[in-house]
Image 1 (cartoon, rainbow, N blue to C red):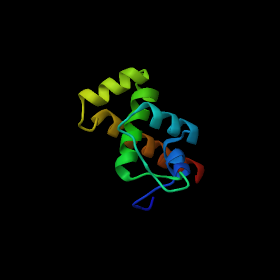
Image 2: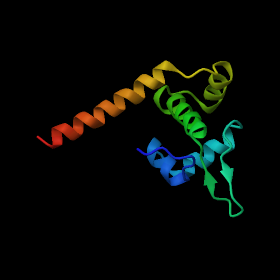
Image 3: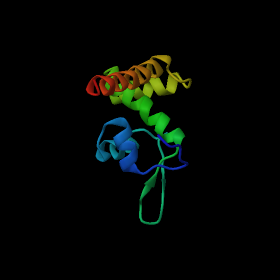
Image 4: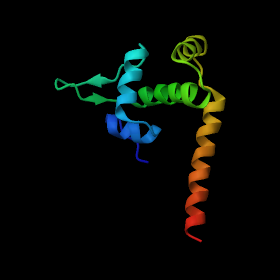
Length: 104
């Protein structure tokens, strides 16, 4: 994937495997998440925003925490979660192996 300064809401939703309404919902629930918006209201996400969204996604979808639980976890632990990094790596590996299997 190419590295960009800003990503659209559609690009970020695709990265995380969620719909755009989920991203807007999380934005309303997590005060730390504040993508920039232009005059028309179009959101632009930075890599820092995406990292936070990955963390929220991991806490709510992978760990099964409630929104309050995820908020508390984010408040208590400002450092990146190693488990989330492992899960991301495993997902990338699974995708790669699936591609190899399809090409056999």
